[in-house]
Image (cartoon, rainbow, N blue to C red; front, side, top):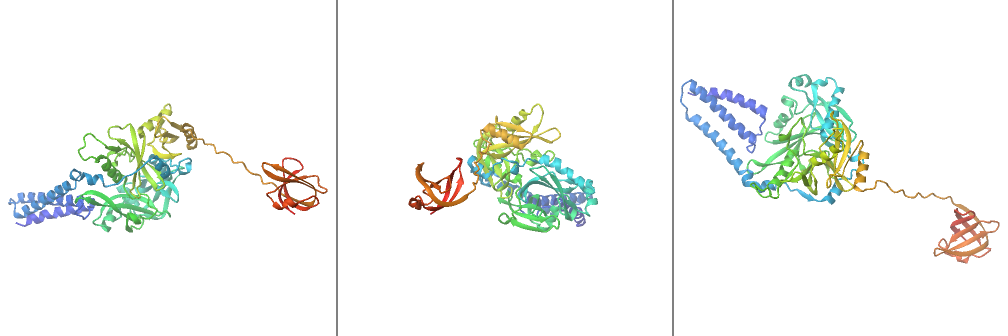
Length: 547
């Protein structure tokens, strides 16, 4: 009887359409999402079919057997492809998925500009940006409809450092109220001055991860790129302040399903939804975040942990970063184990590197560039980040301030941890610096300038700039006449002629270097003289003489 099998197909197809609409799997056989979708689709059909066959008291036919065989084949394919794509047999390929550039402290001093003023020192971390940025929503109509995203990535915009975060819909029900007008814009927080502003756009943002239906960013991208395997989407603006979403596209590089690498990037206009796919080489210059930090740090972890194979129980030559993967460490959207700083290559993420058997000190640190995907390791033995935090918190133990996770800055060529100290309300009260190589060199002060001055004293660097003597331009005078007195004198190896003119009691001293023809001068010679005053009264220095 065919009827039960056709009837079973109806709820299966409906569930499949709903699941596809919600999960949005890539139409790509190298995507785990599509393979599991097919397997679950077949399993659901078999369940519905078995129930209906049991109700009408029929026996299973060759049709159910065929569907079961297909489902089993898909499951076997997933298991076999996963095995041949796994680190178990491909650990060397996983370990070499990224090439980490190795540098020393001298390279660090040239790669990261010296942070000796507020001009290039970003003092605003993610948590502080949230505290000041979220309040800007009060400036718009119906602020309860919206909320600011918690990301607050650091970007370079028109030559300055900002933390940026898009405005999202406040929830499903609020979306229906606000969707007709769209999202008003985004929040910018000056990373140096802490000034926050809500940038309201003339044309509202329509496409967003918080939107529903056809305006949902991921669904919109899936309609445009059905087979693409998407990574993370970042919100950024170009140099004119226009909003975009940058979404990475991943492809497996090991076996059929393993070694996912971000090979290209889709830039979507957040207002119009127009999308263009770029390779890394032709990304627009204004893009600061293309690679997901989780992705980069996972490659770094493969490189560090698989150096001697998968089964290295003694952890020989194994290193770990301080980075805590977001999937494992999310707490109110704030993550420890990394921070951002500014290098000659743009915005970079910082994290310390420690031996697997020693978490109390670092052997160096990495700077990962989210635009280029380049990861650099700088060797620098010193205290790990939590020790630096404890050192500066000890300076204000009576005030019970909390140190933020440090970032790394260059102070006179020395790698230095920079932190802010916050009170219980999350407000910045102090600024602190701690030497990486010697965390006993730690200072704190109410301003960055004061903290830097104290730090300079501790590391033995003078902050005084020697004053150059200012030359006062002397006024030049002229005279002429007949020589009434002439004599020679040697001063520091130079011959000077001492001259007096008729009717003039002043003495003029003229170097032989001014005019060699002076050797022909005699009493009664007529001369034209340019001269300047000296410290001795009635004695003048000749600057030019003509016979």
